[in-house]
Figure 1 (cartoon, protein in one colour):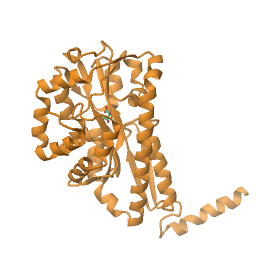
Figure 2 (cartoon, helix red, strand yellow; figure 1 turned 180 degrees about the vertical axis):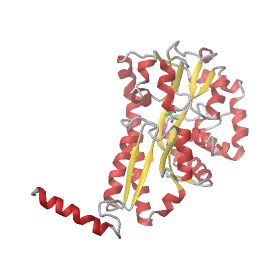
Figure 3 (cartoon, helix red, strand yellow; figure 1 turned 60 degrees about the vertical axis):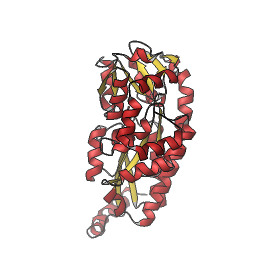
Length: 333
Ligand code: X2X
């Protein structure tokens, strides 16, 4: 095409754009933010979902991804999604619990036996209960939670082989009462730090260690500033995909349905990605220099029980919610 005719076409466009939205702009242009690096499956799968949503809605809903805490830390982004400044946001239920206390319940230490049990509960009655609580705020959670995974402890100072090894350890935890309470129960010295500051907190030795699933230890390159990785599997954590309630209800019904369908597919695919990563990363991260050890979960669970951790959180969540958890995982306290 000759250059001149392109320019001629372009100069004609503003006349049309005076009254209606330009033909190249989406009717709804929304943001989706996460705290994780772009390569983590939470982002790659949601990026694919955004593409499919754009195609299936004929371009009416365009979703732009902001990974890696680009729009602020989790605390900031949670206020943005509540106010509507941000339309979509993925957040750990445990951090969300600063607003919706029940959302921390899946993080109770050593509650779930395996991922199958996790997702049966989170796609079932337990998840339903949590989502109902979330919906009482200005936000909503899509049906299927994304996987963060079982959390492991990394440190620069010493491996964690027994619960006693956690005594006095300066360990970073996310900003969430349940996390702080759990590591206090182990007699550690937990420090609440948002994820976007974790790498530098480890690098500068503000804290000795942190805990996260292997997929994150890799994606955020935490192995560069940590020496040991102790496989404690001490809790399961997931990311709710949250939406600002008003922003979502503003979408036409068919667009809402397409978005829900594609996010559901993204969650299912993302769970498989994470399971695969967490299974293969021990070897890869060992090669990168991390020293791994296994642990006996029963010893850690006993330590929590003796410290009164389960009794305390049963009281906080209440008997009904605790029973829903125990119906899914068996007796806890
Ligand atoms: O902050 C963390 O450690 C992370 C990335 O796992 C969560 O979002 C809870």
